[in-house]
Image (cartoon, rainbow, N blue to C red; front, side, top):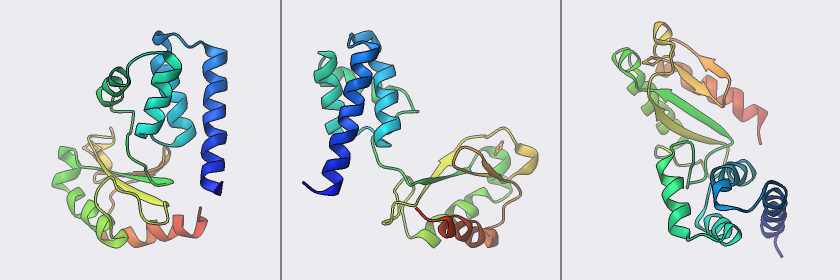
Length: 164
Ligand code: FES
């Protein structure tokens, strides 16, 4: 068994334990999916099938919920998720150029993780800080205001140095 498989197996065990403790009835679906996403980082088809089996519901029902709520993700994301605001205030101040520069520097498409899994870049709507436009949020807390394309490499370097 590879390390990845071993890790995956451990995560499935943790998920099963959560389901056992919190209940395996269909009304627990959202809570179970939230826990699965915390553990795996995203909800792959394999994870969705596992949840469906455990809660004894059709996979289509799980898929319906996963795609309905935008806080669920079916694709892997980088360890550092870079959210670039493309709301109106940020867009008119050049948020689109900042967004493009992140993609160029990392050599990825939007929402796709870098090969080392460190970064992914996401366009988001108003982050509620329009006076600081254009704004970028890295992870849940690191907020950057009045960002210019020239600042992008410095921001990335800061996180690359922290590493995985
Ligand atoms: S539009 Fe970007 S923070 Fe409001």
